[in-house]
Amino acid sequence: MSPPYAFVQFSSAELAAFLAKHPDRSLFYKEDKKRIRYFNSDDLYGMFAGTTSVNFFAAILPTTKQIAGLAKLQDSPHKGQEHITWLNYVSVDKQHRNKGIATELFNLAGRHLIANDRTLKESGYTLFGSNFLQPLIARFKEANPALKSIEGSPNHAPCATDLEELEWMEANIPNHKLKFPELHKEYMERISHPRKSPLDFAR
Image (cartoon, rainbow, N blue to C red; front, side, top):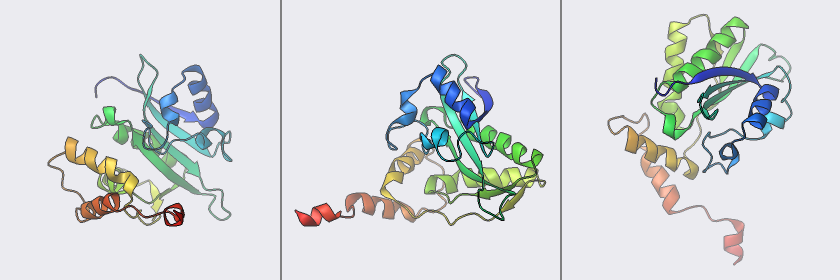
């Protein structure tokens, strides 16, 4: 794995303190511009921030202290689900993909779940997640039968914001066979013919 990454577990308060000491504005750009997709300020200051119910696993560049990848686990707040933990996301900066970061992040998250006798519930997958993260988690489950899990939400329908990820897959992994290749056309059609907003009809 190159360059060397430091893998660290954070609570939301610890991650907030780390980012206060090592500011990184690129983490808070709009969704299509930020380096770590899905991460946002609610992760640090939202309803469950500051509690033991949220855990982050980060891949950090030791020299710059920049976060190259991040995974988030959150214990379910719902009554009757006290044993369940959601996997909110595993996200890696595009410049650091294909270096084993996502695998190591989930390995850490998975071992945390086993050690704390938690049951994993996966979120619905995007096209990108269903091709990479879902198989990665399946391999971990096979190698670690002690991990308890339940079926998560249905996979997300294709949307225009995922086109960038699709293009990244095609550019960086040309021989990869997409799990749902028929969705490529649907992505392109949605980009070419975006849904009109009420403002468009009002003009």
